[in-house]
Length: 134
Image (cartoon, rainbow, N blue to C red; front, side, top):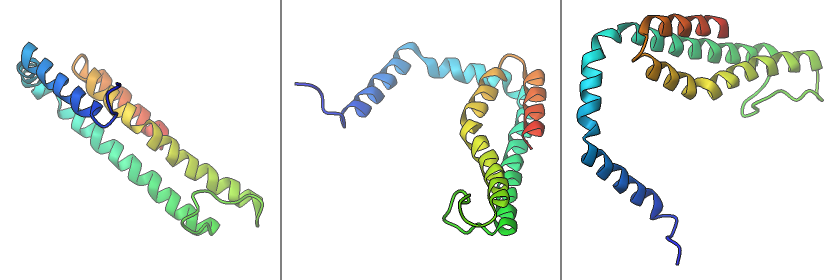
């Protein structure tokens, strides 16, 4: 009989934990992070900047909701009612913020993983990307 699906996450977690214990990845990661910890100051600046970019884009959506009179809980303006131009403009602002939120997790992971190799070019590219988003 196949294994019930609610057992699978627990089983995978146990296998993962035993693998970490067997190959002592914890010691390897601790040494890796400890040796490179002094180089992560700029990365904190980049993460702070991306949090501010998210706040800026969220604020843009709030201001667009007020300006184009789009009430919550509607995510997008209905182009069939009222002024179609205003609805399209609001939808552009909303979609810009939504695109940012959709790419945010991959962006953070890419920045964190590549920071081990080259921190300064990584953060410079990260900041350029944030400026281009806003």
